[in-house]
Image (cartoon, rainbow, N blue to C red; front, top):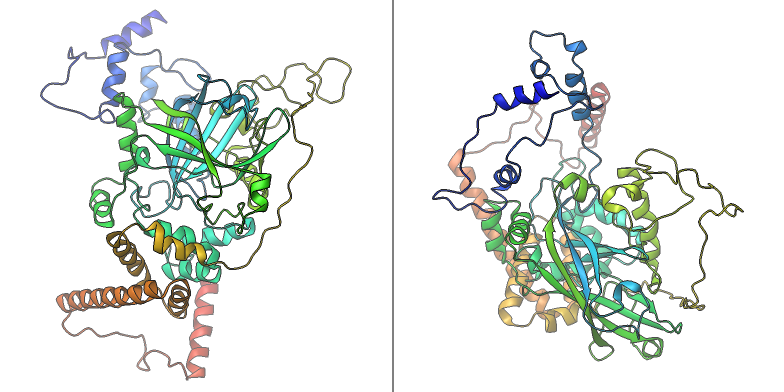
Length: 562
């Protein structure tokens, strides 16, 4: 073994330079160089998967017996399977570790250990993401961003999943598959299709509220550090007396909220698709730790009885004057992940992971999310995904065991059934847990009032309104009939001024696109002609036989292809 190590050292050329000379590198750019500085010598022997050391002649497979080269077999077989299924939504993301510190006494509202005792610190991991982008997509796209937080509490993991906008897209969990399909890629063209997007959200106008927020200045934050985050639901909390309160949590960035305009985002996107990830990594590595203040808007059961709106509707804001706000603490990110696959790609956040003192939301959307989050994690990571390092709670003793790795200690030789007489894990009695459960009947009525309020009061000045309308009009340009007519009808129902100004901006945008296309066509071909495979030309809409022949031909081509 010593001979092998000495041989390897002879092959390495050391350059004695510990400083950057006349060059300023960002932390993300110098990651490999920093690793070398931290480890001035090789970190150990290279081994094969089973742990036996790699002999240097096995690193070259040309003119060798490849069948006997176990290093080659290990490398290629693991390389073929190193990718796991990409998330259907939130595929592109990054993350960091940090802690949460309680700054205010909130025991009046909850007995959750994580939020009690001023000064208490709880370790956590956060994953930031773009909702609709593929793993290699752009972080500058105008869309909702995610901030998923896993608190490693003494009572188990608490997962709080947040969005960058304070209202959610839908309230019926059954809408998720269609909304995801309609807002992602067309099944034939594999391109984003604004017609399908507007088609589905105008047929479900309750989904428009979040889209309005997305088209405003809140739609593209200036990086993950400078965005607020909202955990979507109205949570039920309980205190040690069994009293309940209903709250909406808000994470407010201490860096100050900052947004990018559409031209600014386009300019950055042209040179850096990973702008959000790079900004977060560089800030943490430089010691400029991003932080958020956690606060909660609070209502009592008595307050709810006096409301003229549904406080559990995730597609709308709570009205001013119907709640009071209570500060809780600070979330600080102070450590970059060391391995993206281990700490970010394998991280599993489930809104159903709650702790005593936080019974959780009571709406029907949350009930659905408790089901399908667990299912997607079982698919992506396997049924033992809670035993992956980044997902493991501080304490866990369970009768759930076996299955595909990782199984860790698999509870060793403890009894694997309950109840038992041989000192296996035992349950406890939560004396503070509320006995009564609030039941909420959600309404499916179309309510455009929040959209009217957003246009007239959330958009704080005329310049912001104009940018919102410009973004809205630009997104409408590729939308085809009959969807475009429906969009303008709904806009008119929301606000007449909004509809009038959007139509004017839309007509200008369409004219600009048409002029650009004509100019491009003239530049390539002064007299463009469409050529068809037969002298008959394209089938006319009233030519039933032509359409029939074309359909039969396409069917045969399809069958031959398959």
